[in-house]
Length: 260
Picture 1 (cartoon, one colour):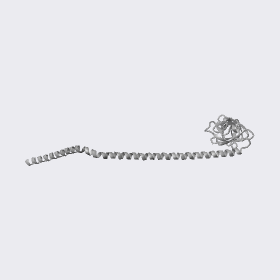
Picture 2 (cartoon, rainbow, N blue to C red):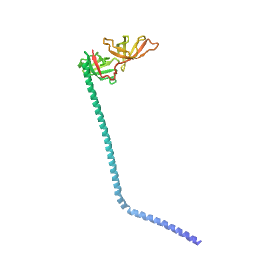
Picture 3 (cartoon, rainbow, N blue to C red):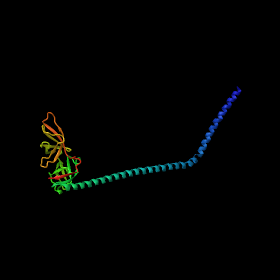
Picture 4 (cartoon, rainbow, N blue to C red):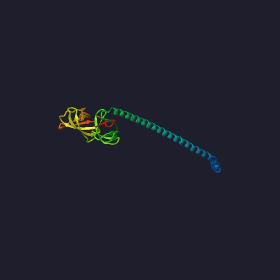
């Protein structure tokens, strides 16, 4: 029993010594750190400062290169836009030169009192089936004069004249009515404008008319006014409804002739 007691007593003493040793080491560490804290911080501070300076400098360098990249991309985009605009201007100049040359050629081919004119605006730039041409009172143009295509089709009349421009209302303007003749059978009709280069004609049920038939002006020169596009007839109707279209694409007209 005595031996067992002695062994337990020694074990407790050894554990106590270890605890005291650890506490002592901890106290010594706290005392040493308190003494050396100032010098350690002063020694490490330049490193921290240097790290901050380097980080800041690197950040500025990265931002600088990023800004330069953005500027270069913007410059490239601007250069591409300038090149595109220059090409567009060159194309417009070429078209204008071609227009002037062709207009001069047309004017040279004008017969009698016919005057060649260039179309300045056409639908949809100008509304209600109206076109504006580049001749006016300076070229002796008058209200009421007829306007036709170089191919010969009659498309409208001058309704307003300025010094160097004139306004032309097309026969296809909505509400406009024009006397005409069906080429098939020489049957007189009235063309009613529907807008957009379209017409509507009513003829008797027994009048012969088919798609593709020509509708002509009633005067001596019998110019083409419209082409039959569709014929509608119901079993109970007394009249046929004929839909026709202008021989000209009113949205792309470039040149016309003006004549009394």
